[in-house]
Length: 101
Image 1 (spheres, rainbow, N blue to C red):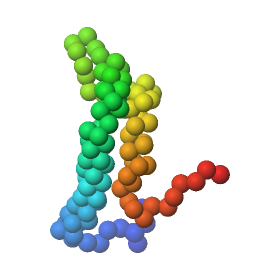
Image 2 (cartoon, rainbow, N blue to C red):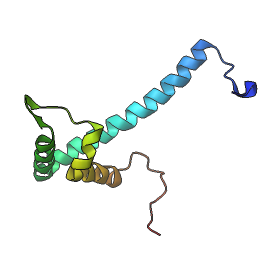
Image 3 (cartoon, helix red, strand yellow):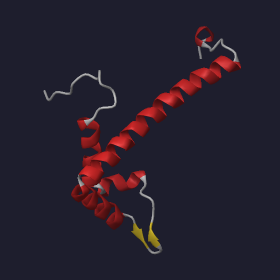
């Protein structure tokens, strides 16, 4: 590591920097979850398909388990629904538009 790029602040300043990052990440996650829940309330037929897909992938010997990252390969409809929620109501209004080349 270059000594010129080393952090020079005190521990209190470091705490505030870290809390800004944590706050920014948790706020956007909360907002995305709120939009997803509101969309599922408005479209219960979509929620039923998502729920059925998650249940079918996460069934085990002792009942249902929590989905893990490795399950994403089998949760095509669920992943597409989550991506659509993020496209439909972006968390950052000033994000550049996506285009196909």
